[in-house]
Each structure stands twice: as structure tokens, then as C-alpha cells.
Length: 459
Image (cartoon, rainbow, N blue to C red; front, side, top):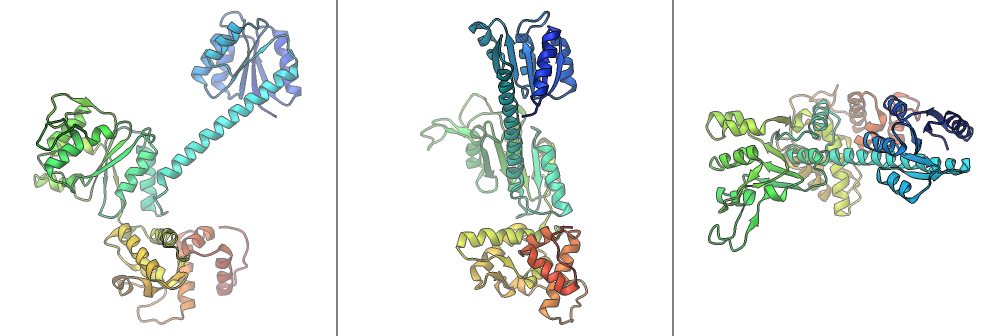
């Protein structure tokens, strides 16, 4: 077991003895004769464990342990003393010591303590790494795509998630604005709290007010009991106000006040109740046009538009269409119990060539329908909705194939796969996943078409 150890012992000969013994047992060791020197080197280097004597001149081991626990909580501290009283042990543990050893001791006892401490730190770092990895995956698990447009969105999600500022998400209907909001929530400090969403266009003003702010008992005829509003239900989490551009103009000043004061007054109540939640809003409208036409308050716009993410329409996301389509094939086939595994090359051509006015939502509905209709393990053009099946683009979706040119299906598939590889900079692994093919199958096709020797090398 190896590890980088810092020994702090004001007896120089003892420090040298311990350092030599632990070095012989596989550790990398540095030693200092004062707590002040130890703290300085801790600021400059990374150590797996600190070993400190309890009784030292100047700052003692307890004080050093407390400082390490405060400034470097990831580094365990093992305390050594000749005065092995229960009080000393309790004092050391209270300030964050990992272990406590009394003199005299066998050096192998110290070695075992250091092995456990190094393992403890390694496990803590692994747990931390896995939590971050899970957070990252959960935060973007539905943000599928590798296009530059989507890379910009995921980059913005990374940048704004740690902020408490109000976020405005814009984009056409069906682009996935709520998924972006959920991704931000899952990566924020509010991730452990609730994600509370409401569509501001789905209810009249009077009902929307009680939904957001709540009401007290007797506030109106049917208010037989008090009700907590969504601002308070979102405490410790995120409140997502979808379709904020549809909010009635009479409600907007009340929302503005809540955002400014970070408190709400329930309908019929006379007390302000504070809340602590991240506020995210979304709209498919151009709010600046709404302001010019006096349907949206300018002061509210500036309050919600502190940071902003624009979600691109599907038509500008290129081959993300195929990534999403394959994802929906997988989820819909599992849901329906049908063994549909991929989309055919002609279907891919149709999907890429269509303009998707309904965006990702329309694509999802298209694939759900196709999976329901298909009789095969691969989607065919006949499985697609008629408007997509019969859609004609102004230019050919497959390079080198003219509008009137008739080619064998194998050649269409060949040209399309070559196009996909070109779009992905030759990455065969990603191309195979997007096309729903096994990587070896893709290699065999390329070998047959172009004489390329199939290898396990990935470009």
C-alpha cells in the first residue's frame, strides 16, 4: 500500500525514525518539526495522510488537526501521543482526527493505521468522483446530440448551474426547454430539493395566483383550508415557470414583487413568507416583441432575463436527429415490448431531410408511431407518417444523388453511411451507435464498399 505521508513531530530524531520506517514499508514520506511548517507544506503539496504528535511546542497536535480538518477535510489525520488518556483521544476525535495511537507502539501498528487512512481517503475521493459523474449524467442524460448547437447548450448548462441567478430559457415549442431546466436543476446546489413545474398558460389568472402563492383559510368561498403555493413547495429546490410569456398581465406585478423580495403573500393573508428556491422560466415567445406590444412588463423581463439559454430548433441540429431517433426507437420498443433495434438508411435520409416544425416532440411522436406500425426489427419508410414519407427537400439528402437519379438501395446506404462518417470526423464507434449498427457490421460494410481493411482501431 503506497501513499504520500506528512509526519509532524517536534523531536527530530523521532521524526527521522518514523519517516525511515514508513519509507521502508512503501510510503512516500516527508516530515516537519512544527505545525507551522506542516501547514505551509500542506498548502503547497497534496498528502494522503498527516501523522502528528499530540504534544508539541507552539501549536499542538489538537490545534493542527483542527486546522487540517477545516482547510483540507479530505486529508485524514492520525494523532500520536505518549499520554494516551481518554480525554486526549476524545479531544482529537472531536476536532476531526481519523485515528489515535499511543506510545510506545510497534511501527506495524502505525503502518496499518496509515493503510486504513489512505484507503479511507481513496474511497472518499472515489465516492466524490462518482457523485460528480452521476450528477453530470443526470444533469444531461436527456440532452442528446453532438451538434455544435447542442454543444453550446450543454456548455451553458455547465456554466449557469452553480449560479443562483434567475434563468430564462427560450426556444420554439417542442425543443426541450423543460429538459434543459431539469438539467440545470440536477447540476445545481438545489439538486437534492424538489423540481416544481407549472405551465403559466394552462390556467386562468385567479387560479394561477393561488397555485403560485397559496391561500389562507377563508380567502374565498371554497377556501375551507389553507393551501401552500408552489413558491413554498419549491423551497430548497427549483421552481420552473413554463410559458412565462403567457402569464396574464395582471399577475405579472405580483410575480415581480415575489422575485424581488424573495417572499410571497398567500391570497387573503397579511404576512410575507420567505422562500429559498432557484427560479427558472421558459417561453416560446419573443418577449421583447411582447413588451413592445404591452403584453409583457419590461421590468419583469429584466428580472427573469439575468442569465439565458436559447434552445435551438431541431432543423439546425444536423445529425442529432438520428441520435434522438435511435434513442426513441430504443425507449419506445422497450415500452411496447417490440424488438425494434434500428432505423434503415432510407428512413434516416427522410428524417434528416425533414424540417421538423414540431421539433423534438414531433420526432418523438413520429418514432412512437413508426415503432407501433412496423412489422420488422428495423424501421422502414412505410412506417413513417405520410407527411414525412412524402416530404421533398430542395436538395438531395444524400451527397451525389440527384433528384431524378435512381440508385440501388445498397448504394444509397453506402453514400449515406459515408456522409455520416464525414459528419462525425470518421468516428466509427459513434457512427455505428447512431446508425443502430454493430461496429463490426459497419466495418464489414465499409470493407465491402471501399476495400477498407476492417480493424479494431477507432478514428
